[in-house]
Image (cartoon, rainbow, N blue to C red):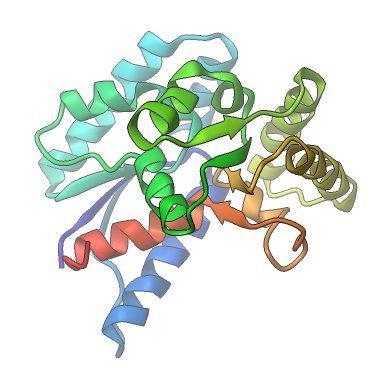
Length: 233
């Protein structure tokens, strides 16, 4: 079993859930008392939040590269990152370590292709939803087109993620607001919706919304990381 290196703490809520998922998936494949072999660096989320709000991507890149190097030095065989948003600097991280970095867009696109989906709605933080890098990677590398919410909807979703979900506050009123956005994305031609923030599944999931297929990046990350660890990919 290879050691999974996790850049975590973005947020601690998503990281804790991912830790659970990784161990559950490893046990699914191996049985017995087996769990995943993991090395984690959990960052101070306040730094990440300020990098995002102040548009300090160069600083965030340097910050996360240093953490990824610590994972490499500690014996991780590859690295994953518990944040769609911070994949803004994923290419920088990958170029500065000597072990593989598994990109969340590529993992998600692989699953979408299995379901023959080419046009998909995106929910996440504002940087994830509106940034060119995220949509461009889906389109240029995987021929998948993203459908975005409106400006007002992106602001609303971003606020719910940072001010509620990242603090483990789950509100039905916010769930209904997400449902309305998801219906609009479906009307725009989305064949499915990416839960492109690793906390969203706490609020919206296949159990409480069945009108369109949902693809949870947290679950996809866990499955891909475990299969990579076990040599199944």
